[in-house]
Length: 581
Image (cartoon, rainbow, N blue to C red; front, side, top):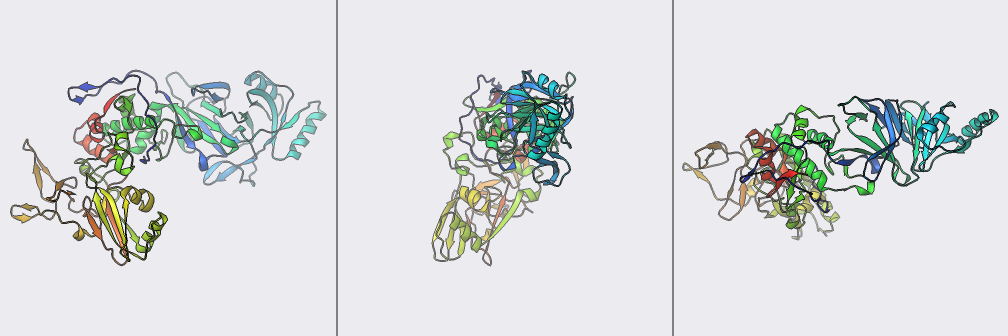
């Protein structure tokens, strides 16, 4: 999940059942119910909108056609027993492989399978899909159409007007009079996949309903699933040509089914169940906190990390599904409102406050407070995903600074972390050029607009230039690292120190420890500077993500240590409660 903030009003809960048990919340059984409120998930939109998309019913008997009303309830118009169908925008499209996907597309003109945009319409109109279908079935290539809410019987599809006129003359000679027609720029057609056999045509004439498609009925107790572009989905689909363009495709399904498609993408199904449960509650809350973020594309939330990753049922397993089921309906709240539960892979030893990362008032999200993370470092995080370096030449830095509006003179000669946040993450970074001019930039702009560093916990590869910390002496000898050092708590428990340990120096600077054998963490959590080497400046850091809210690897570590999903959520989101919607 990318941590871009969306300034929207949080949804209010009509009632919240607090799970209080003394000073600590206790888990409660989920209430009985279905898959929750409906949510609209954008699968293909904008530059990714489709000219054609295949659907295959994996559990059921064909598909139902209709539209979704203002409450997102499906209104059925008709159906087909075909289990493999394709929806195409009504223009000339051809079947074949385009951009590694076997589908219908206007560029595949050499294909022998073409779906044409010209049709012949029989006289009159009909009250229902069934009546139009019955009339159309009397002719080869006949199919029902719903244009602006009115049903018609149509025949054939032709790629040229001349071809349609020739077919019209043949019917006329048989005493069958038809009207040559097409659809508006909002029309979509349903065909049997791999053929030009028309099943249904729908045109809302720009009214914004789009074509709704639901998988056909299945046996009692069995849920319908649909395969599309390699992904298996619950729920139905809406195809809409917004502003007459390619098709925006939206998956409309219950919230709980949606969360089952998020959790195993954001975490592995093999992870500890309590971590997965924390992820389920966070994902559910985050989705609801966004409201209708993508309203201009006529859906609520996208399937990408711009919102949160959603992959249908492809990675779902017994563990991740159980995590969703066991937390069904539970959300994170703060003062009665659903919380904006950001999360990320790892924080490198310290999370960060939303006011630093997003430069907004902390009062907007008082529960997103940065803190030292004593758990994450014990998780089995792959080094390649935890320790990182990024190098930039002076010329590159000059170019990037100028793109931000700074009038840099000459080369960059030094870089320094000149201010730290309360958790020891960089707050301000200062670049100095060869003329002696300095340019101080917030860490938000360094990461989000300039250098795109992997996390907010970083420094430089020249630890000898770090602000000196107070020396630490153990048994009369200076400690050069954390290796071999231990801490004893108030109960006498002895714990080996690792990269999550930190200290406060005599100057008041918070410094993070570095686990022995680590790479790229020496200057993390300190005031530091570098003059580079050979005109190249190297940033080093730990963690992966925006550092706001829950660390997924930290959740893993806490679950391994016996903490519950409630403990995890309450650690990473300050002052929150967890309750039912």
